[in-house]
Length: 241
Length: 241
Image 1 (tube, rainbow over the protein chains, first blue to last red):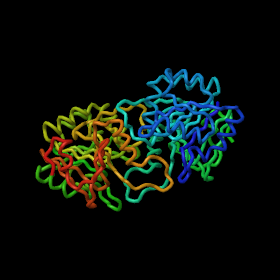
Image 2: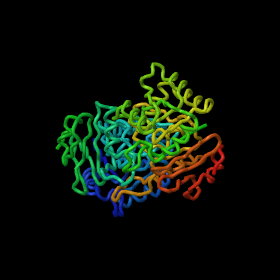
Image 3: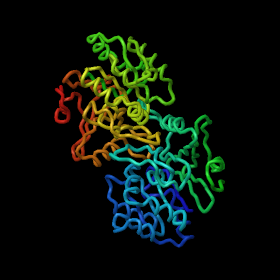
Image 4: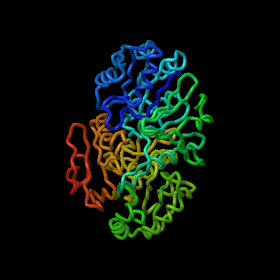
């Protein structure tokens, strides 16, 4: 399996999509001789699908086609060299993955044919077992919570522990702690902006463009910050390092 | 109908729950000679139901009993003089309202018997047609979106237009604009901290402890800020002023 799970698409001030992770992505693309990718842009609501595909072509230097042009979306996945899943609204994305019959085709592509999966923000959320740790507003009238489950632990992308003065809603830490209280057998990995969890074969590694750590939340356990994936060993079936 | 729809429970630095709205609440309680209330605390995940009831007794000066002590929750609603719905996690609250069979009993109490409804944060969300404009994390494995529909327009509580530096997730304005793009026939009222929409009989009024306005979002319309409810006239069946 080849998973790039990114907290976000762009860092503040960055002009290019996935810029902070491009070195890692390029190394994989070159090693695998990949020259094209299929974009799943369903998370976008107020942005253009084709414009996002063009941005990614420029950013990654490979041919990128949006799946909405495919007559049969599942066939586009069957033929894909690489799968890109853009950020946006996680509810919209997960619903359309299900409605377009793409859950099993993507699982097969990634697990059985080793097609690389690069997902950021909402595209990172849907790689986990469910979208219960999204930050997004549930804008759809119907919702599905289970998702691709390519990565076995819930991830909270765009994790931030700063707090706006005067705002009396829950902090992110409180929201994740609520998740853990309701789901005490599960853990949540909190990924800050500019960070990446990478599964390559059986290896799981972590990178942060800003040198920051990630946090792991579990009910009844101390919340700690980590700079490598060793602490994830009990939670995932990968070699952590 | 008597609805108190509050953005939040406490203002920053306030020691007492509902302090910023207490003058309005006390006027109603006295006019109606109300001496007790039933608390629906289902939104609380990491706080104690009875402790919340005690806080509210102190804050409001009336007897407050939590509905979790009732053998038959719907009967507690049938006998309630006043209904208090606490903030917390909206998903948890809405699910438990449905699972405990309280949707119709509360609708009847409020609409037919004129029992006052005081809801803040999550308790404000569930008073609207659905919980699609919550800010909360969907921590439950099963979810229901439709809610009480006592107030006919979606409300986004804890509305804030400030933004944390370096955070690349959507702003609140972007999230609500996405809702409106997906649901172009609907509007969203954005209520800042310390503000209250009050339905009394057929009258709808607005108060803000900080003298701030509320915003109305609708797809394809300019977003404006209002200090009275006149602009809501086309959206609600109340006398707006």
